[in-house]
Length: 164
Ligand code: GDP
Image (cartoon, helix red, strand yellow):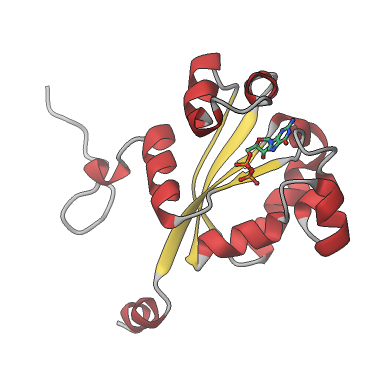
């Protein structure tokens, strides 16, 4: 009941975070540590090498940009970690933890941000984060499927095995 009350005043939100290939080798543990110490719950997690098709679809809104091919090449050059982060105000808070898209700007305006610390340049910028709740839900659905279909009516994962 106490939890219900807390959720009424501070509704939980979900956002999609991606640790991009450039940050996976050297900064993954530190990034995950910061996510947890800021009070996010990691509700889903998947590490994989994106196929070209998936990377193209994921960034389809940038299809007409001059950097689109570079971006797709970069996103599938090695493993990514996809994370669903849950917390009140998760979308805005994760964007602010990441800092601006361009690390040069991040170093000026948000020197403690993750991109200021871990990004190399405007393309190889370590992280992705949804810009709105709508985009977050769309991308979570796209990358993880509809997890609610695996929940029973009490919102609990149903682990019973189908009878054969
Ligand atoms: P984000 O929401 O902060 O990730 O920024 P955008 O949605 O505008 O861009 C998506 C991704 O494309 C960025 O995270 C960068 O990896 C890359 N990108 C954005 N702008 C540029 C640019 O001007 N040049 C290049 N080469 N890459 C860019």
